[in-house]
Length: 341
Image 1 (cartoon, rainbow, N blue to C red):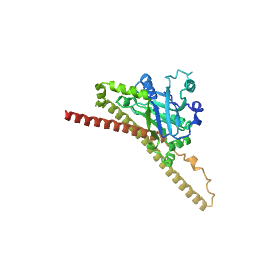
Image 2: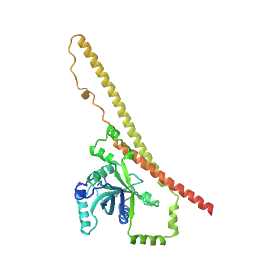
Image 3: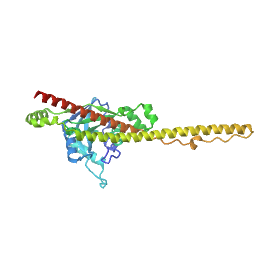
Image 4: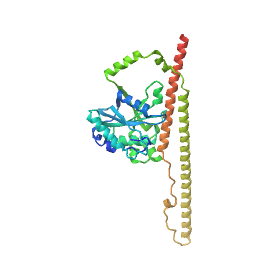
């Protein structure tokens, strides 16, 4: 589980007792409404602006469906809390839930996001740790900004099998990624989510809907979206700048590598000419030397960071597309209502 400082996950000790119970891949996720409310409440109580909140998902696997029935948050702690043990905290929470007959199997984790900024190396490492220990584990991404616009934004992601193999080998070079045919669109796979409530909860929701005022319903037609769109475009431009810098680094590496190959080829030709001349004079040829030691290849830049940046850029573009599409629909609806009046 990645901490608030986005450090490496520590899940092996926690999931040791649950690894043997999950045997089938996940095709669908069923979430209890209580879990959704707990995630939203966790962010409202502890999340501030771009502050990320995280927690643990509990549940069970039924055939190809992952049922998330409960969750608990990670408490806030700083570097000064040297005595805080995340693994021990998780074990105590799961033990307490088991004592009150609540599902306690570890099936993943959740994290909030700020304007969709969740595609990062920290999330990749954390999800790989979870998915390597528990094959069916998922990460839930909750976006409070989009939720505040009128619709719940909660998505579930898993690492693709190709990316899992790359992460196991820990080889993120250009050749390895090209051989595996992995692009930013093949890194994460989204799993469909179904929110399930009991019949009593559904009746309560119907009653609340009947009691809601007309003014609250009209808030969904609010067209003031300049701040949200401006922030999304600003984050998109920042990521594009990062992508441009990575491209410059890779182009520099390619030029240095090509230049070194030419120097190596010229050295071999000069060596062959000198040996030919020495042989014509009856002299012994020059001793062979290890060319790889004389011409050490330049260190290639890691390509995984570039893929993550490309994935985040694509995510920002999708968010802007969805947001503008909703606003266009509101504009056409408002125009139709105005013409009707």
